[in-house]
Amino acid sequence: MARNEIHVDVPPERVWAVLADGRSYGHWVVGSSEIRDVEPGFPAVGTAFHHKVGIGPLKVADHTSVLESDAPHVLKLKAKARPLGTALVSLELRPQNGGTRVIMVEDAGDKLTQLVFNPLTHLLVRGRNVESLERLKAMAEGRGPSLPDAASS
Image (cartoon, rainbow, N blue to C red; front, side):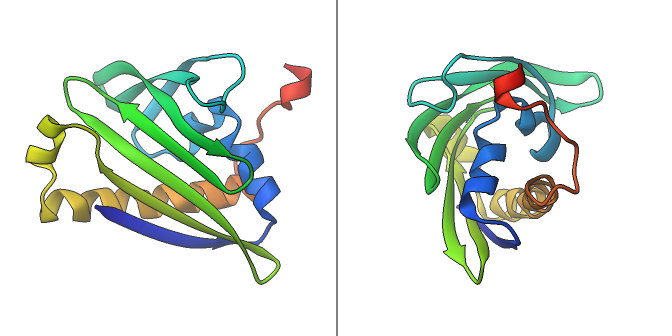
């Protein structure tokens, strides 16, 4: 299991606004190169966004679906990048010192992926998620790429 935390200098509702925009994942999730589609109602339970993940010409098209959604507190996702595997990702938002403590936990999402998730893999995922959370922080604080408002799209 890879666990990461970061403090963001905005309230949980602002961080949630970034998480609730399915197109934002292409900007803040390291390895996500393109968001192909976001299902209406995202991030309601059962909805998904469709993406490409990978580096250079080695990209896989798949999707990430919502397992649990409790705005602005918890978002649990199942990310698929088959045949590479699946991941369960939990994002918890806690009010802290006028901002938000974001806790991200990522683990293998199926039996096959569990075979490859070992201490080294967890270390690599944890390292990747440090950068992902820095990007999420920048977006939530208005320092990253701006995304269109949901009301205007």
